[in-house]
Image (cartoon, rainbow, N blue to C red; front, side, top):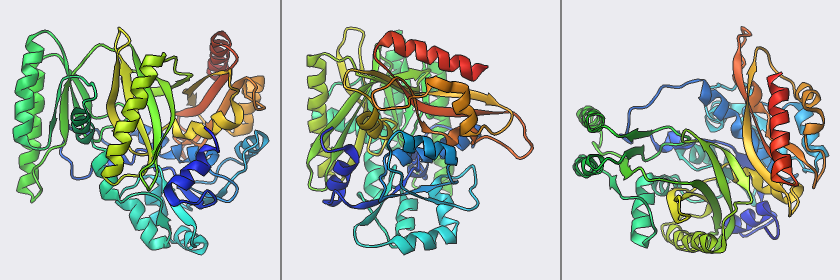
Length: 454
């Protein structure tokens, strides 16, 4: 990665490798981009949102000693000590006083005048907000704190993060993707449903996607024409209800043929404000039931497959830059069972899980090592301090650069679901497993699962 990912990102977005960033881990910013978009029926707020909102802590290892990280609560001091032992130069933490588990960190900050004042005190030329993704909330935070956002407008970010945009841009650029139809209005959706019926009649399946769905949400696989028609009627009813209340009456959906695949991929590139495109990395994604679980490194792609990924990077990067975007772009892709590449299934013009692993790879993972980024679920009845977790895992935690073991890169998610009444809850531990071989990696993974289960 050359000069270092964070310094290169600062140069790309500000022209100054020494710029000071206030990192904001507003993970699943898609919730804000989706406001006003009529799509598939949405599930209500749930326990998983509580955990996702605490993924704000992932930003700690991207930041440097001169940077700041905005968090929902102060990190466990023992966790910070662990990161310092691994060689990370820790940023200054700005934590809100009364976080709401159901809110993203930006919402908490906007509701905390003390945090606003603290950020105003550090506002200066050369200081920028760097969100996970930019929405109207982050623009409001910039206005109130007088700190400029490093990146394009929320309007641009919303536009290029729509799956409708991904679909149409890939079509225009001639990049291979499954047969499909992007829909902005009811006429387009009706035509897509009609075309999808032909796919179903041939014995194949289709998938209906929200334009701003994320992490397995807003996606329905359909093999029954009657179910497709029910979805169609539900969308029409929602559009009519919205129009009756003065809304725009438009939709944000796409329908695609559900094609056979062998491997999910994720690759990342960075676009500078001047339009330059830098390829960062490609990883093999680990998914379960359509939900992202982690990344495997290295990707295992052959030369021809890598060439297609690099070609797609150049084409997509130039197009996104022309449409006004700068910053980190993660692209989901896949391989078919014959090894052919679908180079873009969706564009995520924001940070992604791989982004937060970039500095871990630079500082801790040897050039010949294999790694697996993943999370572990923990069934808990009380808050778990980091020291207790460390004692339980013992030598399974990585303790030095080039070593083997687990690097923990988010700990707040472990206790995010804890309640005042002390009831049982599920926590999630994020980290990267590192080993010298795939066999050793699997052994460490199994040992950690066993220790957590006990």
